[in-house]
Image (cartoon, rainbow, N blue to C red):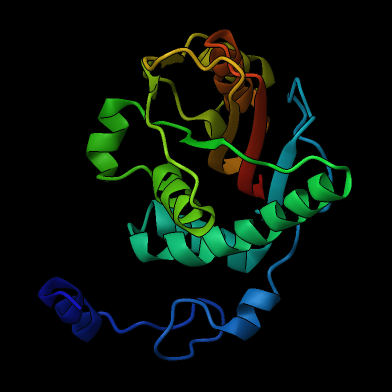
Length: 218
C-alpha cells in the first residue's frame, strides 16, 4: 500500500456504499443485490447487435456507485464496477462458444473524454473500467479513439439535440482496424447517441465488429 493510500484510508475509511460494512466499498452481499439489465434498448441506438449492459442505473446502489466513481472521484470503484460488467461479458463469451465462435483477438477501446473534461476530472472512468477488463481477459487496451468535439452534457438535452451534440465528436488516430473486433467500453448508455457515433467512427476506421459494453442502462 502506498503512503497516499494509507493516509486516505485513515482519513476516509472504506465503508460499503450499500450497507456501511467497514473495509470495502462494496460488500459481496450488496454486490449480489445489484439490479441486472432488464433488456430495454436505448431509444436512439442504431445497432442493437452485440450490446452488453450489466445493470440498471435506476438501481439506487448502482446509481450511487457510478456517481461516486465519476463525480466523487473514487477511482477504486473501477474494480467492483468492472467485475459487475465482466459477469455479463462472460455470459456473452459463453453464448459465442456455444454457437461455435470463440471471441479472440479483441481490442478493448474505452469511450474517450474531451481533453477539457479529462483535465477537470483527472481520469477517464471508461478507461479505468477498460483497464480492469483488459487485465482480466488479457486483451490489449487501445486509446486511439479520441474525442475531438467538446460536447454539451447529454443528460441536459432532448433526443434530437443529443444526436446532433455527438455528431462528429470522435476520431480514430491509430492504424487501420481491418478485420478487428472491438470491445467498446462505457460506464452508462442512456439514449445511445454517444455509442452510435463512436461505433460509426470505428467502423469507418475498418473495424469488422463492435461489441458495445456498459455498466448500466441509463
